[in-house]
Length: 317
Image (cartoon, rainbow, N blue to C red):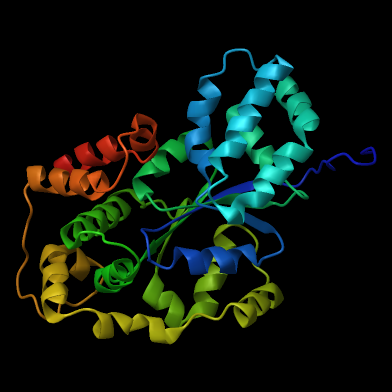
């Protein structure tokens, strides 16, 4: 029996879940929706799962309490920039001693992170929203039993939304979208692990798609799903906003560079009548230029953003 003030242990099966989608593809909406389930806890682009392994590997004496506390401090620092992840920091600070004892018995980075997500109480499904689908293999190496949900959205809508909030280069946005699309088509082939959801399909038919997602993680419950959608109804008007915000030249540019991948997902180009292709060097330079603008020459920042990794991925197409 747990002592008063300790974190109550549970025998429930814990299912890791990673929600992937490129920026402005509906991941924030899906994050809010899934987090409204009483048995799901997702961080918002949390860095502990993605970068924590690097931090963990830098410490060689984690059986030492002082060294272990340094790691916990670094994990807290990695989450400081995102207010929606404040609960993770609070949990680490509140459970330092308990986390140390658990890690001493089972010294494992994946197990440690799983325990971090069990605050303020254990849940059967935990995970993270992530914007770069190509880092999925890294996470699956750590949590091979994880379930993955990947969002796909019309690239015109994606760029329209991105352009209203940032100065992202339009050609880079198409490189980014094509990479996301191709990786998903070529790798998300195991239905027991991956569920690919078109944002437009979900918005138009939210009930059956939410059922598929919850069945995917073993948490289907009709009453809970109805309550989730009653409190977080998708906005159908979001599907056509790009027509208002993008000019014809912008639409034609996005369609021409995404021409082939769009059709694979049944997005019909309206202004472009043929595909344009960027060579490997152009794709690579678009990636470098996107991240070089206004960014301090901080090697750790470039490492955390995987900029050079992205550069070589885009060179390979």
